[in-house]
Structures are given as C-alpha cells and as structure tokens.
Image (cartoon, rainbow, N blue to C red; front, side):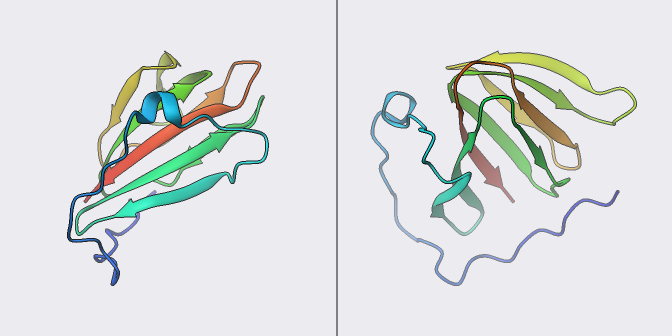
Length: 123
C-alpha cells in the first residue's frame, strides 16, 4: 500500500503560535465527543484530537508524514508496521508514541472508557 500523499499546506494555515494550556489534563473525551476534531493546522503540521469508544479502534491510512500520538485518557494497544509482523506496544494515559512516515498504525482501545488521543502530524 502506498503512503497517502503529503497534503498541501492548508489555505487557512495559521501563521502564529497557538497555546493549548494543560492539554493532558484538560482534554478529556466523553461519549458525546466527535471521533476526530482538528484543533490547529499550520504550514507543516496539524494537531488533532481523537476519541475512540470503548472496544473501538483507530486505523490510520499509511501517511507520508511522521506522526506523534499522545494518550490523554484510557489505555490502548498500538500495532505499528506490516500486517504480517506488526510491532505491538501497550499504551496508557501520559504515554507518547512516534510513528514514522510510511508505517501503518492501528490503536485498539483496551480500556473500560473512551480513549483520548492527541495526534500531531508533521509533513
């Protein structure tokens, strides 16, 4: 599977700093949160919040950009790499995982609550 093409900079890319205070404590997903919400888009990166319901999973298309995943609430099993032999890593609130460009990634919510994820994609 080919990596997704690098998106062009957003026409509304923000050219100024944006402060998100205390994100690890302030971003708490609920059952009513949207699955994915873009908080900020810059010229070469994007910050997104993702909520994965109990028992759910998040499968990312293969990206042509590096990604940094931070777990804000809950627990997950990350599977990164080829389907035949993915590397697996247990994650919990406060953990961060980097996913290199071109590597498929799946997060499976293994906890009894919604999984809160902050995703930074840099291209």
